[in-house]
Amino acid sequence: MSNRKAKKQKIFKPKARTPRGFRDMSGDELSLQQSMIATISSVYERYGFAALDTSAFEYADALGKFLPDDDRPNEGVFALEDDDGQWMSLRYDLTAPLARYVAEHYDALPKPLRRFQWGPVWRNEKPGPGRYRQFLQIDADTVGAGNMAADAEICMMAADCMAALGIETGDYLVRINNRKIMDGLLHAIGLDSDSDDYENQRLTILRAMDKFDRLGLDGVRDLLGAGRKDDSGDFTKGAGLDDKQIEQVAAMVSIQANNRLAVIDAMEALVGGSQAGADGVAELREMDALFTALGYQADRLAIDASIVRGLGYYTGPVYEIELTFDAEDENGDITRFGSVGGGGRYDDLVKRFKGVEIPATGISIGVSRLAAALTMLGKTQGSQADPLIVVLVMDKETRPALMQLVQNLRQAGLRAELYIGDSAMKAQLRYADLRNARLVIIEGEDERQAGVVTLKDLELGKQQSVEIEDNAEWRASAHAQQQVPRDALIDTIKQILA
Image: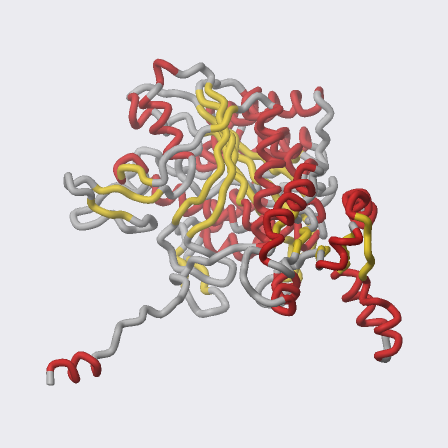
């Protein structure tokens, strides 16, 4: 009886599914991202930045914005409680771990520290179309330099990264502003920096300005005032400014000029009366002078009053990499592709650990979003793996000799593999097709005696199959294959691939 019951019990089979907000990646998409990381890393290294890799987990209290609450620090981050009672979180970005690393190893580090890092970051946020909970970033930061040369260098390096990826001037723009100018603007409209609600109102205003490109001036005005209802009916509470204050902020965000100095002059007219505003203007003038001296024109590096960046820890220059070509969004509307990275100066972030101000500035590039842009621009040619050659096995006894053949191909710089399975020839050809192999090599007994191999060009075969109209023509074409002397195989393959 018990045996029958045991037989009736169902064996649990977990459902194979990707967790919500996450995704798998393979093939050309993965190759593209790896190629991009290598290209951007090479630019960073040329500028003298050294690679660093920090742990995926950080103690939650080290993340700054996401401090542990009474139960669980789960707003925005993925957290777990360690066996010693301390909360750890998957890193939200690559900047907070850098601040911790610098504070922990400060005495032993060169100053300034110039580091770059790439890797996944995780955000516990609601997923949506094209919005994932895990994504790749590649950052570069200078820690310990308070002068504007460090910020200017980061901006020029960002432009050089776009150029190295094959994006043409005119299809990208690094847009630059300064948080001190924003603070000067808040002073100019009469906000009291000592009020309890100042920081919340400040960030609400900055985030409203940050939406200028997407919502236009009317949308920004709504968010500066009572608030705004979007197309879905969701209401976003505004900053509560009066009409005069709204128009002063609108005057700043709508400054337009192709000349960097003209934009800075217009900013100065609005905020030059405050110390913070005057300092921000002076810093932008210093950066502009460096850009001009090194030949970076306004069509690559622009001063833009609408750039404020959403994070609260920026203290000086802020910058954003925007791709300016038109693209179709998830709603089918044609719009600018938009931002693929950004950063700025954050002189107070390491201070949380050290108690003293340590200046820092850096930039972060979103690899996945930039990969989508390169695909749209057709700039993925260099990202694919080399063409694959698959050597098939007709007789298992010949496998050692065929492995030697594969090794010879690899030593000649070709990408090759031996079919390792145990299937028949038809299944082996299907395998090569599924692997998107370019060439297949077959060596049977007769061919081995004659010192030749059969070389199939699968790509040419696919092309011919579209053009061929009847079986006779198909047989006459020999299905894009040829017999090649073994000692001429490598030269023949290189000619085909060339």
